[in-house]
Length: 223
Ligand code: MN
Image 1 (tube, rainbow, N blue to C red):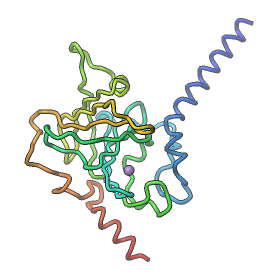
Image 2 (cartoon, rainbow, N blue to C red; image 1 turned 180 degrees about the horizontal axis):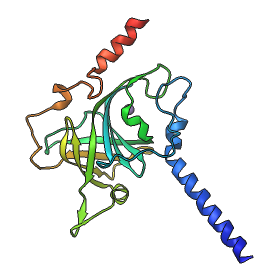
Image 3 (cartoon, helix red, strand yellow; image 1 turned 90 degrees about the vertical axis):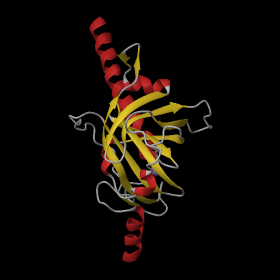
């Protein structure tokens, strides 16, 4: 009897873990029709971790409003924020970052045009990418990234092509009904630079070299 109870308990724990791991991408899958969009389905259970550290990606996305999707690998998914004005390299500028649904790891290399009538319809390019280090500490000890996310205080050191150095994501108390509002702020370090503005001076993809406009016009020419 005790063995049976123990076996059942173990089974429920395993099932519970499986459900929890899927749950994170449920919203992502629910919003999309994969017969229509070429975005990744998010079915891959395991992804190969990058030996150089967790990855980040910033996708420029011209949907109903142009924005930059800032994504950080946390616990096997890409935690995501939509940043309307894009990241700044000036530490005195705070950029609004609206939290959006978790994206699958495979999304990090997605570029293309999401067809009309679909969620987020419009062109997407990989504006910047790379690995990052969690640098949030308390009393000289690293705080695990998942905990930083829960605390609403994330500090990462980005190793991107356009963005480098410390960035902070700070949760604000001004959530709307369905959206959590955060702020994305450049931290003060050797890479802080008020004169740079990569959002306007380096608009192209770090994968294909294409701009959002080139992706869109290519689609129009095909018609
Ligand atoms: Mn987006």
